[in-house]
View 1 (cartoon, rainbow, N blue to C red):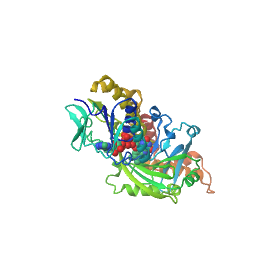
View 2: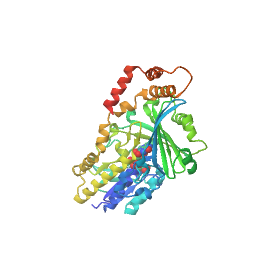
View 3: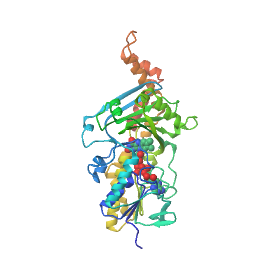
View 4: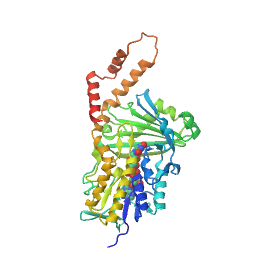
Length: 433
Ligand SMILES: Cc1cc2nc3c(=O)[nH]c(=O)nc-3n(C[C@H](O)[C@H](O)[C@H](O)COP(=O)(O)OP(=O)(O)OC[C@H]3O[C@@H](n4cnc5c(N)ncnc54)[C@H](O)[C@@H]3O)c2cc1C
């Protein structure tokens, strides 16, 4: 029986649209289905896009894509209830083309990417929430929506972190929302004139500033990090929270983002800015949230749906992996079409591509990272230690000066850190990172 399409891609996020563009460029008859009213309306990222993988399909993409600003500086630091210690990284190469990273707003970028897929020849249809995969025994043969079956020898699942289509199937027999591998992302967007953003953050036109904070100001036990990214005429502010650490503490995510926003360091950056958008989304990151397999008879899974989000407390990167894995799935589907073979044996090339492109090693190598990232001391004792230390080193009180080793000891004691704990955490970091 003839198929309706060569390939069906579910989800017009970064993974799905990148895959659809490559497939259409390769001559495949591809259908890209999106449940949202338009691509991007349901998608949320912080978001810093490390988009170099896009060069493979759209050379010089940043000239045309509606990006916000190219990032020239990153700040990383610790917050306590009223203080902050931070480090800036200003890299001269980031100021030059090809820029390494851009701030983006997904409603704009994803709509643009889906349009590029359409221009390349893909059929893109929005407002279509796919109900389920069309299983024929062990094989996936397209998708089912509203009682209608659309067939293709290969289906690429790029339906994001909450991939319902995979749940309870051989792709993901068990729910993956184990608390350890699941984070809650919350984001607010504030409007502020471009000129004021540039003045406030000491940026040239088009330049962007990104900052990420270990949020040490919350109730003990609550673990999370905050971010602030400058867009063209808005500022994105948000939190990534360890869900498990919120259980039973009587704290709510909206209170936490308010606390973050009202911290004196963050509030100063948002002065006179007006809240225009709010969103929240689950993040399933790392090796622990991978599916039972990345491919099978007639299917492959890419992007967040496969758990390809890298988050180490300093950075959160998912869009780049979504693009790369979407492209590797597309390349595999193109060879499958040529060979007339969509069996699991042929699609195993996808795993080989994930391996050779470094995706699998990135996630395997950092499997134990969560033990470091979710060490409660990084959200209480270490921010306190850093601010006590720098307070003592930077403040002239007229009192007798003390040798630095004594200042260090005093800060360590104030933060409740024993030498043994410092050593233990240091060894753990070396072992697990
Ligand atoms: C708060 C927050 C901050 C983040 N910050 C960053 C950052 O700064 N940098 C970075 O690189 N990453 C960041 N990430 C991660 C990044 O957003 C994701 O890794 C990325 O969006 C994954 O892209 P995707 O295409 O796999 O999935 P998604 O972007 O989630 O796209 C999935 C698409 O599938 C559609 N879909 C779902 N189900 C169906 C269905 N049944 N039928 C049809 N369509 C369907 C959805 O509507 C959606 O359009 C952040 C995430 C969060 C939550």
